[in-house]
Structure formats: structure tokens, C-alpha cells
Amino acid sequence: MPIKNRIAEMQEEITAWRRDFHEHPEVMFDVHRTAGVVAAKLREFGCDEVVEGIGQTGVVGVIKGQSTASGRVIALRADMDALPMTEITGLPYASKTKGAMHACGHDGHTAMLLGAAKYFTETRNFDGTVVLLFQPAEEGGAGGLKMVEDGAMDRWNVQEVYGLHNYPGLPVGEFAIRPGALMASADQFEVTVTGKGGHAAEPHQSVDTTLATAQIVVALQSVVARNVQAIRPAVLSITAFHTESDTFNVIPQTARIRGTVRCFDAKTRDLVEARLREMVDLTARSFGATASVDYERGYPPTVNHADQTRYAIEAAEAVGTKVNPETDPVMPAEDFSYMLEARPGAYIFLGNGDTPMCHHPAYDFTDEAAPYGTSFFAELIERRLPR
Ligand code: NI
Image 1 (cartoon, rainbow, N blue to C red):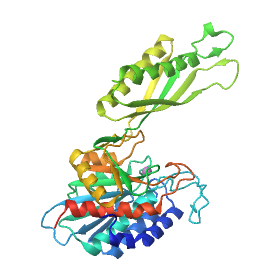
Image 2 (image 1 turned 180 degrees about the vertical axis):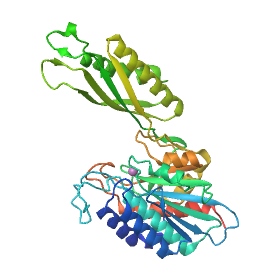
Image 3 (image 1 turned 60 degrees about the vertical axis):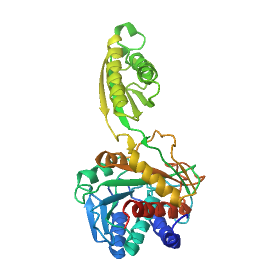
Image 4 (image 1 turned 90 degrees about the horizontal axis):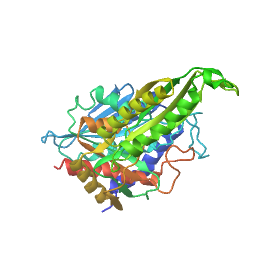
């Protein structure tokens, strides 16, 4: 039994919502129009409670089942924000906002969860309460954390939480998931190295900041290669290298490098940060320079809980064409991780078909995938909150 019939009937409507969101992308917490549309629809469907302004511009919809005797509460989450980039799709519903684009399919996620809201308010075929979380600022603003801090879990006594993300390259109708870490943590760092500037023809009078910094770049490559246990994946990438000199005959006084660190577990994350700090300091000093490290922790790893992963697999198998229950983890990060730190839950990938990758200017969410995502949410709730 594939996608639910009622949801298949809703495909045109879900597509219209999705394309409207696509045409009007909003970035970070500035998702006022999108959140307004979401809240209005949730009220129109007859949600028992609709609260705006959770996590600044997030929206929460609450739907009670035909019975709530079980006392069980499950949350489903979608992200609403777009990216600060320019779309090149040329589609009739392409972004009307210059410098903003739904290049990660959050327009689709929002429309699919709205479809689920409509289905739940029509059927209420469950015993318990469904809490729908529409969050802002997934792309770098930790809107998911803001919603948790603002009581999205505690206020409605949420017991489990589930989310999904479209996945380019995975055929439409298919799902992929794994227990444990599915996506990486994302930290960023900036290192400022200070040597002693001077005339490039007289390096012995200087401390060559550029050489010291170059050695740091090389030395840092040994952290993952030589300090992290080989069975624990990690990435340390240096993405920027600037000296304050931009000419041919000056040894610069300072230089700056920037980069990112990705890991799947807390221990490796701590190790990489500690080794990075030591290596930067000791390498700089070995050249007579000094260095400061500004290390900023971002999203934690997205770690699926074992039981909830199993429930997600069962629901996906009921509505999808195929489920990969042991997919490879991926290195990008996701702020649903904060929700999974707050409550048991699972995050699943939904096939977007053969499309450009997320964050590509020609990317577009595949509307044919929506009935699978919406049916997944519906099936999951009806299985987890049986009447
Ligand atoms: Ni995304």
C-alpha cells in the first residue's frame, strides 16, 4: 500500500502551496510572510491551537486525535527558510526576490507538513496529540534550537520528534535513514597569526607570518589523519588564507586562516578542537610568531535514536517504494540535531530524484515527492498513536 489516497488527492493543492513559497523565499528568521501563510492555513484547517512567534518567527500547530486518552504527544518538524543566493532555474514560479532562493527544498518541507496538518484535521485517526513545528533559520541561524529554548518541546509535553529532508540523487518515492549519526556537527574557526612585519628583502629582520601560517595549514592536516581514530570520520578544511600584505616586497605583520570542522560524535569533536588549538599555538611559536584561535561551535551532529529510527523505517516502508535503513551518513549539518538532543526522534531522507544538489542555483524541490513525505508523516502518527 503506497501513498495514502486522501493525500494523493491533495497533491495539486500541496504543489500550489509549495510553488507559492518558492516564489516568495525568505531568509533566516525573516520568514514573516511564510509563517503568516502557514499560521493562516493551520487555522483554516481547524487546528486546536496555533501559536506564532515560537523561536522568533516559528509557528506551532496542535492537533488532537479522536481520543487523547493515551496522553501521548508526537512532534513533526519542517523548516521554512530559504538561502541568500540567486536562482537560475527560469521556472515560472522562480524566486521573485533577488538574492533569496529556496535552494534546499524547505518550501517542499513546509508544504508537505501543511498537507499532513490538513489530513490530520480531517481524519484525527489517532489517540494522542500531534504538534507541528514550523521553524525559521535552519540555514545557519539555529532556529531549531531557538524553538526548543522557547518551549516548543516542554510547553506541549512532546515525547518524540521526527523530521525529514529531501535528497537529490535518491529516486522519488524512496527513503534513506540510519540509526545513530546521520549528519555531522559543523564548527568554524578563525586563526590569526602575528609575526613581525618587515622588508621582504631582509627576512632575517622579520618573523615571516606567511611561512608560519602556511606551516599551520599543513600541520592541521595531521589532526584528522594522525590524531583521530581511523574508524571515526572527521573533516577539517581550511577555506580561507589572507595575509594583510597585498604586495610584492612586504612581509606581513598578520595573517588569518578560516575553516570548518565536521564530526559525528562529541569525543572526536572535542579532540579535534583541542588538537587544533595546541597545534596552532605550538607551530606559531616554533616560528617566533603568536597565534589566537577563535573556535565557534555550530550545530551538533544529527543523531537518530535507535527505536525511533525503527518506527520511521516502518512508516516509510508502508508508504514508499523502497527504504534504505543503513544509508551512509553525510557531512553537512542540520539544526534538527538540537531537537534530537531534546527528545528521542529520527530524521529521514526523502528521494528528490535526479536533480541538482541542494544549495545549487538550479535546484528545485520535486513536487512528485510531496505525497510520499506527507504520507510518511501521516503513517508515522497513525502507527505511533494507534486508536
Ligand atoms: Ni535544508
